Length: 52
Ligand SMILES: [Zn+2]
Image (cartoon, rainbow, N blue to C red; front, side):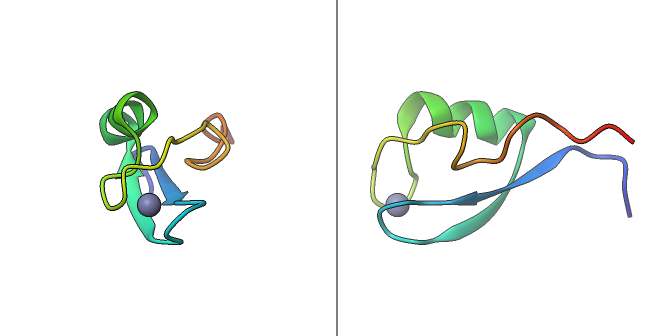
């Protein structure tokens, strides 16, 4: 079930966990948490995609 690059976003404010792909990840970094609006950092959405 691999192939797409997904990340698990965990909001530091509301603790909501959301699976996101690269596009949504970028959106989160720009606009913040979709649930509570808290600022999102790269740590919150996972680091660089795993190569392997
Ligand atoms: Zn939140």
